[in-house]
Length: 475
Image (cartoon, rainbow, N blue to C red; front, side, top):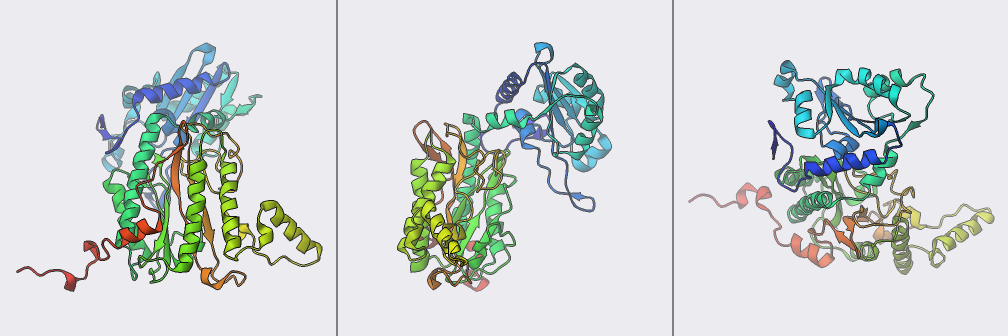
């Protein structure tokens, strides 16, 4: 779909302009009386010298307007009970546009994005001063754009009022996705699933991790997802023990597992998918034991995810599955059956003046089972997957989050059974809460051992990687 001279969407579903207008109306309705709220863009980031990273708009500004350009901000007000939406954008500049592409300018912003007023961004300090003089309440969040922070501070200094945080309103709005948002996230999940399937098909011993990454990210681009949602992780063997391993430079070895955590971003919305599978296409007995335990934990959470539950409860459910299985495999002692009994066992050891050498679940599963997902891959309240902040909210239809239980066995930890050392398994899918349960948005990629081994055996020498001698010569 084209807006003016710009293509803003790709091959998948879109959010209608009416929905953005409804979001702004809802946001304004939640402001205190006689308020001004300012939402700022992300700054551009230098990659090296005068080369910038590809620009990514701030999620809140995307959510309220879908405006893609840097050096922009929104002001939403209800002064004297009258709702108003203003935009501040870069001016048209023919000299700069020759190098970096067309700009909407204030007229284009007014025409295509629906503000009541549109100004060039240099007018922001003047307009802000006028609005602050009229407002009883002001919403602004520092720390997102240093340039705008400085301009705002110059006008805010000396005003004896409490500064309010627009995130308090936007979190409540963004946590429940609309049908159109879920459609976009389902599409992102389907792209990521296709990429993971390809990874399973092409994987073989001797490939570099980055070759798998390259093929997956090619699928992202081909399907209209212009970038990964985060740095792709392709971790062979013990590299999987590093949770955010992104070097992706090692050779994949026969007999090892490879853990791939990679998801695309489509129209601003993230997918986040992880699969773990054998490099040679066949699980060993030890790998199978750990893999099936992680899969059991993940499926238990997915089957239990429904309105009224909480992410904290789902994490405790996964932890319970792990405890029972790891005791059965001789990894945890029988006294580690619950979190409470684990704490008592450690307390008893410490009371006797000894440092505990017992393996505890946190040694093997050090992150949470879920985090919120949306315009940010670690969305909204997420401040680390172990953080319980925001994880005691009762789940509602439209809430989207990951389910990613995992087990990691340090290769040098002599407390662990030798056969498990160096194994890291994580299985992650994206789910949305529905009226009676949940839907898996990334269901297109297999995860049972039988399905994985069948898929990996279907094409062990894909065309892109055949040696020259294996190709047929022309007659």
